[in-house]
Image (cartoon, rainbow, N blue to C red; front, side, top):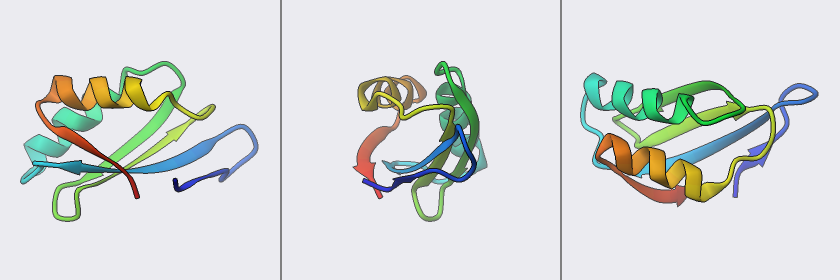
Length: 79
């Protein structure tokens, strides 16, 4: 699990998502994850499959998994 605090009150977690291949994929995943309560920033990179999420508190992995599923991709875990 790679979760660390960048600034007081924020947590950065890097997830591995399989199936992303383009900017549209990145946008779909980012859009769904950004709707989770407490998320302040999402950056998805299709070429690496990494999705970096900054949130006010650690996120429930099942909520992230559900958001990624809704976007049509698979959460492979945390980097």
